[in-house]
Image 1 (cartoon, rainbow, N blue to C red):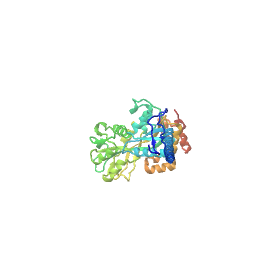
Image 2 (image 1 turned 90 degrees about the horizontal axis):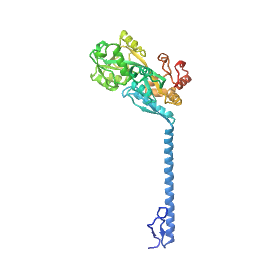
Image 3 (image 1 turned 90 degrees about the vertical axis):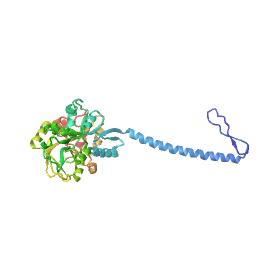
Image 4 (image 1 turned 60 degrees about the vertical axis):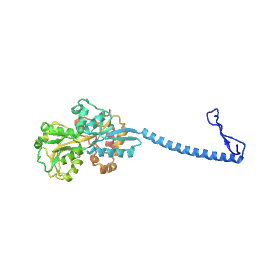
Length: 375
């Protein structure tokens, strides 16, 4: 064997690792080079190890911080409606501001009926719901009769009042509700609060068995009206318009159909959570030239008992802060009228969350003491 060369023994030492190569008799300089090379290689390995250890620690810290946050699902709404983009924008704001402590996952839904049911069951931690579905879930009546009364949620805010829109193309021969007999009337998808409101109106005025019902979603029904596949469009207004219909009116003008005074009274008498309203002419809705009588109702923000008091308080503190609400409204106007007006709950006997009451009182709102109750 030539000087300076190393021969590797095939044996393994008692610890199960290869033996260090034995040097044959040879040049000492080669041995020195070997030691220098080995030293640099070892130093390089140690630096790499330190780098990856640092990265791993950072990842572990991030994951740990995320895991430490309280996590809640925020139920939204169907595509084409106003709730879907509004609640989505709200959850993004919440996660930017307080996501390290309270993280909110946006979950699309079928609408008000689904939202209230899923919050009452604890599948959603929080969401919005029409007063009709909130009341029925609380009392175990109507659509929630089989569910039974459920009081595992509380009200945290009054989102806004909505109206119900009944519209046709401007050149339609339909001028009144009576003219809708035998016509194709879209009542929206089942599971939405708007669907329930449409059904309630047509039942109260005695038209349920006289129309041809359709069950298309918000966007699809707007297109169907424009293509004359349906004759009548029924939907919630926020408060007096709905995006799908407003967009349609740019190309094909539309008209709102008004209830008569007698018809309006029949609807509000049959459902105590509705109030009479007259929708003023909406300039952005092309073709609308006259006001229309309809019904209005509140949309409530509700929270399941799984949410901590701190989570409810901070959720409101972020969303309802004037500077945040102003920015949020630029993205989603539906948030514009968010308030702590709970006076209607004195009639419905539905409770306000104590943490929500605390927040609104700090804002100077007079919250009726008789509607505030914990779990």
